[in-house]
Length: 412
Ligand SMILES: *[C@@H]1O[C@H](CO)[C@@H](O)[C@H](O)[C@H]1NC(C)=O
Image (cartoon, rainbow, N blue to C red):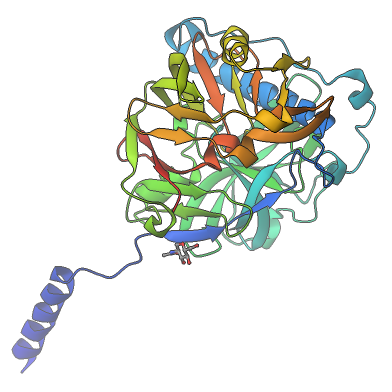
């Protein structure tokens, strides 16, 4: 009897392991767009655009300092350097004390629980650390804070986390490990993160609590696996890939797969060209009204950057063929609002058109509208462009740790 029962148990166990478990292919995290760079009346918010550029430049300056410390910039990329600290134009510097809601740039945020507390988190494929405000932070302008004493799974680590963007924007605080769970239930244990006890300047730049870095471990200041890498190693996602769908409504981050109902055809994957930690792919061309204007450049795909930026010379060349385009200072360009060109990017396969809505940032006066590609030498090196949400709103984007590649597909 005993023998039969245990045989039966073994048989059932064998059946269970042979039957594919119908685990969902991935987990959907709803995300929201917080604000934008175009005002309600259709004019472009130049101040918000300038703030965004300074924030992005200093964020990546911090990344370049990390790369330099870990591997040496000379081993990273030809022409890579640490650029000077970017500062806000004077008329914006005086507004530090204003509430963050007036200083926001465009961010894509969703909810994540750490320990027993929920946070509104910016999902950033352009950095690799997780941090949220600590309950001990008096300078943090957010409601949700991490209190290690109220989480039984909290474990304090040695050392301190500090990021300084050089313009006075800093965040620093102790380091912990704790459970981290996305709303829909990708749950990991022992995730390293920082609960910052001080925060200043334009570091956050939006009404969210903290940031979840989704770039590679090599960029981590904390020298820790980012959340998604922890999820892979703990086996809580079925595939090492996540997908972003950024739209005016129903945007989502999909963890552990891609949501094929949101795109058409197959994803076109391109291998990463760098082990430095960014999601960088090469062989890119910029196409204006069907004509290739720039070719064979590399692109960093960064959900934490709103616009697109290229080296100043390359971007000047990009605009030189567009009728009526002109420089509007600070690396920004305007194009006659009534004759916006069709802009597309290709990585050697399909041509992906940038959504006209995303490319036109709104009225700049004199019949011109700001365009979403700026010229800026961020220090990534020769021929490297930084493509943010302007691109990601135009395509479905898949970030594959398994394939060491970024994939794109046209939206459904
Ligand atoms: C995929 O996206 C669609 C459209 O937003 C959504 O309804 C669906 O729930 C998503 N699929 C999964 C498995 O989450």
